[in-house]
Image (cartoon, rainbow, N blue to C red; front, side, top):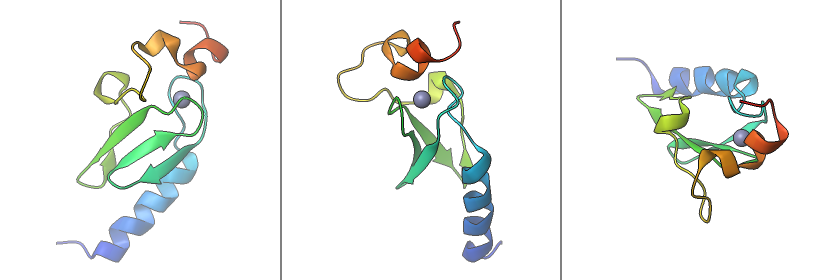
Length: 78
Ligand SMILES: [Zn+2]
């Protein structure tokens, strides 16, 4: 069983290098998920490990499809 402090430290370090896979924007930690500061896509954190998969992420309110996200529009073209 790992100490909780250790887990948080790893997560903080991860947070600095992780980027939204769509537009390479920064992420912020919010409860048990990571939220893209640009497009608002919400990636779940499971057992302390961020799941950076677009099909696992939750779209922000008012956005119906991934292609409507600002990261997708302004970032690299699919
Ligand atoms: Zn994004």
